[in-house]
Image (cartoon, rainbow, N blue to C red; front, side, top):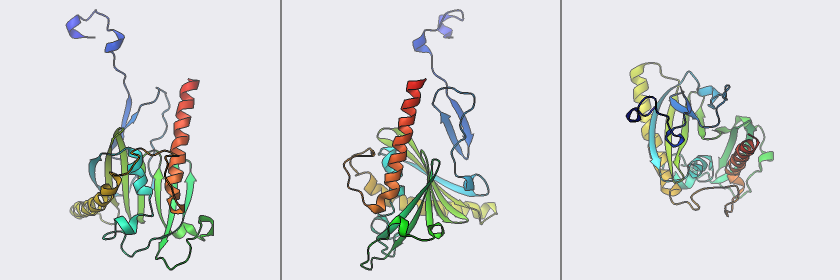
Amino acid sequence: MIPANGKNSKVAENYKVKGYVVKEAYGFIWLWYGNGKENLPEIPFFDDLRDGFAYGQLSENWNVHYSRAIENQLDVVHLPFVHASTIGRGGKCLVNGPVVKWNGTLMTFYVKNRIDDGSKPEKPDEIKEYEKLFSLQMQMPNLWQNRVAKKVRIMAAFAPVDEENTMIYMRFYHSFLKFPGLCWLMNRLGNVADRTILHQDRRVVLTQLPKKSEVNCGENLIQGDRPIIEYRRMRQKLKDAVQEAKHTD
């Protein structure tokens, strides 16, 4: 109803707005923008972060397509160069693997970087007992987790604003402190560290071309870029599935 036109007047189609289903979970507002359905899919989130962790969060807008912001977190090659003063200390620039494993739309990639001693990097199938290595995860379509330790995680959500802007929500998760005051202090310290590292990345990501990544976008990738390659393929697969579903509806 448009009050100014009277309660008995009809509302033309061009005045009607479409409603969307939203739900609050894990500290985010989730929106289902597909066609209406009774049984919506489960909200994608990391199983080990669903409970038991406290976290602090920071957020900021980057003037990049969300795919580039995500790929930055999948890049295991850049650490000793972009983060030489922080998490990349030690000069471990030789990238073995990485080993990439999928479980549905959850990608886990195992990292074994080391100092260059003149030998060739190991191929993924040459790495033994890779499950014991340091690992990170990508939950499609836009969640990333750094499994720093059993009780410490860093998680990021990349929310597209438009084709040229992405809102990044970075969280420092921990489960080793129980007192509220200490948790607050740890969250603040974690956010300071996360912001420092994030801004080291931002200087590079904002200059990348093309602005939007695709499976084939004229880049020369190497073995160490395997998580990025796998992400692009899965992203394209999911996009193709959406288009196919639209044609069959």
